[in-house]
Length: 259
Image (cartoon, rainbow, N blue to C red; front, side, top):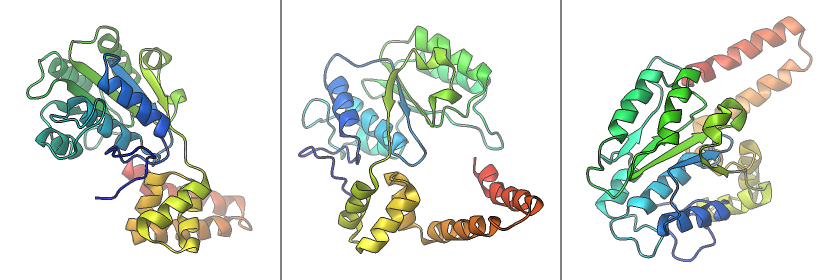
């Protein structure tokens, strides 16, 4: 298992660069300060989903080594890590749709009205919640305003501007920011035994977003795509306005399909 240096001795959270957020969530998970809804905001690849899953493990771990931490090896921790636990509800756009729909939110609300099946809490994970229709966001407000007992909602999003203010105001807000390029480079050298030049390259290409940097390290094709896009953008500089629009349209196609 890849080990992240969180700066906290004997911690299983393995989240790089967000010690303050880990400390806050550990306190909430290990005391009576647990909120009914959390909103983790930051750019893609900064570690939003990883932090949310670690928090879910800390909330429901069967054998926590200390309050607010988790063992990582019990059945519950392993199932949450694999997003297959019966008390973990994952809500994301259906195949063929860009956004989460209101009917999906209503189905989630029904599931959350049920008692936890095997763990202390039923947890709803809503990653990339900015990809949700306004109707669906409004429908979720009822759950945020009148949460059921033993239910925790974990929302992630890229920016607050893409969410309804009424949703934001009802959540505990956690803002994640990229690591400095120096810290990201140092981490990549240590974690992957990379030479200085390559670690610095990955840190710059990822903008300090560790999740994005790890993807570059582990997926050579992703690096090739990044380098090709950089070359394409350089080609745009002397191009005509028509050629710029044409190339920009071609570059956007893979991202439209991946959303």
